[in-house]
Length: 441
Image (tube, rainbow, N blue to C red; front, side, top):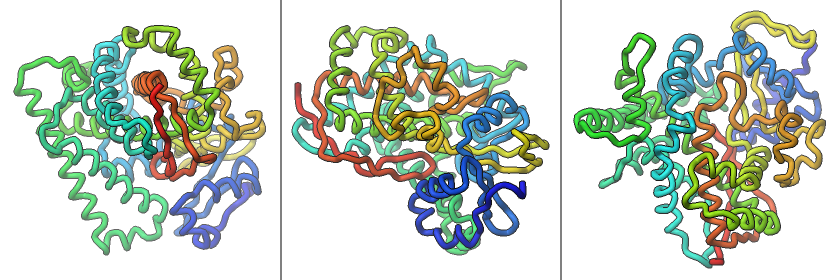
C-alpha cells in the first residue's frame, strides 16, 4: 500500500470548495498525474483508493465480488435515508432481497406495465410547446418520476403526493452529498440542525409510502403494477415482505429508478440535438416500423441504433459515475496488497473515457456500440454496474429511454445552441445546461 501514490489531506482541504461543487476535475488531475490508482487521505487516519483500472473494477465487481462489500458510504450513509434495501445492503440480506425483487423486472413482467410506461411518457411529453427553447432536464425529471410512480402504484395523484415524494427525495440527496464530500464537517451538520431536518423529511416520506401500501392492501383490487408484484412476491420460506422492507425497496426504486433515467435521457436528447446527422439516423430507424404497437422485446429489436445512441450517451455521461467497495478480507491484485477494510472508489466516468481503450473518447459516436463490437468494450463499460449487483432495473430504464426518444424524434426535430454539456455530479451525474428547441416535423 505504501507504494501507491498518495494525495494528502492538506491537498483535499485546499481544494474543498472545488470538490464540493464538482470533484471530477480533481479526480482527473490526479489520475493524469499518478496513473490508474492513487490514494486520498481523508483525515482522522482514514483514506480511500481511487481507480480507473478497468481490470481492477472487474476484479472487485465480478471475479472476486465475494471479497468485497459496498462500503459504509452506501450501506450506512445512503442507507440512513433510504433504508436497508437491495441497493444499500450486503451479504445474506442483499441476496435475499435480490432474489425476491429481480423477477418483477424480467422482460415478460415488464410487458405487463409497458402501456402504463407509454401513457406516463405521453402525458409528460404533451407539455412540450414547439418552437420554444426549454431546459429539457426538469421535464425529463418529471417524466422519469411519473413513470416510476405510475409503474409502481398505478397512482393517479389527486393532491400533491407525488410532487411531495419528488421534492423530499431531491432534498435528501442534496443534504447527503454534503455529508459525503465533507465528512470532516459532520459535527457542524449535527450542530446546525441539518441532519435533524433531513431526518424529519425521511419520516414523512415513509409515512406517505406506508399509507399508499395500506390503501392498496385494503382495496382488494389488482392493478398489475410493480407494487402488486412486490406484494405477491414470497421469500423461500413463503413469507412476504413487511411494510418497512417494502418501503425501503420502493424508496430505492424512486431514487435510483428516476434519478439515473432522467439524467441519461437529458444527456441523450441534448447530444442528439448537438448532432443532427445522428438524430436523422434515429428518425430513419423509427419511421421504418410502427412503434406504437411494439412489445418491449420488439421495441428493443427495432430500435438498435436508438439504443446505441443512449449507450454512447451513458458512456460519456454515466449517471452512476462511480461506485465503491470495501474489502471484507485480505486480497491482492497484480502484486498490490489490498488489506481487509480497504475502501476503493471506482470511477466509471474515467474508465468510460480512458484513452488506453476508447478512440477519440470525448466524441459522441454511437457506432462504438454496434453489436458486433460488444465483446471488445464489455470490460470497459459499466452503465449499470457489473457482476451479481448489476442494476436490477436496467431493462426497465432502457425501455423507458428508448420509448421516450422514439416518440420525441418521430414528432420533432431537436435543436440546440450549446456546443458543450456542463455537468453537476451529485449522488448521480446530472446535466446543468440542457436547453433545446423542439420543431414540429
